[in-house]
Image 1 (cartoon, rainbow, N blue to C red):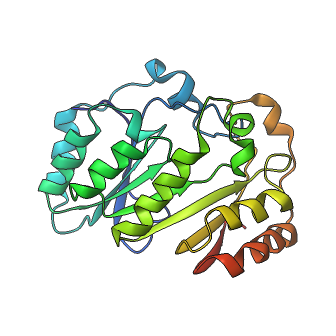
Image 2 (cartoon, helix red, strand yellow; image 1 turned 180 degrees about the vertical axis):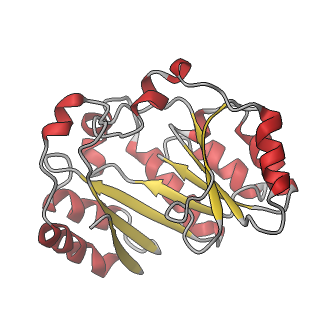
Length: 232
């Protein structure tokens, strides 16, 4: 089974509305400088694996109490054994929420069509024209758009979310994102936290003020069914 690098036993913010835990998987095809899971992305070998038997025993011991598992990372869809992990979780009658950067739409589609994903959160890093700059990777923004379309058409709960990093996400970027993904159900703007950033230089960036975050969120409201703010 997939190597699990972290387990948050009670994670109400990761899977809102459900009693849930979060599993962290290692590795990512992005190098976003503001990422706060630097060890998972850059140094996964420095983190001990959680033994599969321990994880299965954890799930079985919480039957009737635990409602769902959030799968996060890193980028879970980049893990070849992800389907095996989701199958084990679903066999125990638990809901699965997947956190993804959206760069692997074919894998996302297969898991959704197989009934292995009940909820999803898709990270929208910035405006489509800035994806290579913001993720410091080679990525086709069309793949991100395809992933958003897959979630829209699946008929299951999902949200799109953007971390508002000064210098990487501004007013113009929010306008472009809103036009690009207009009609999606839920869009969430998240406050940037300059803690344990993948690029140490980003620890010196001052986050937007609460008023600035709210103003950016207001720009997006006409384009989405619901706009949320997280982290204020």
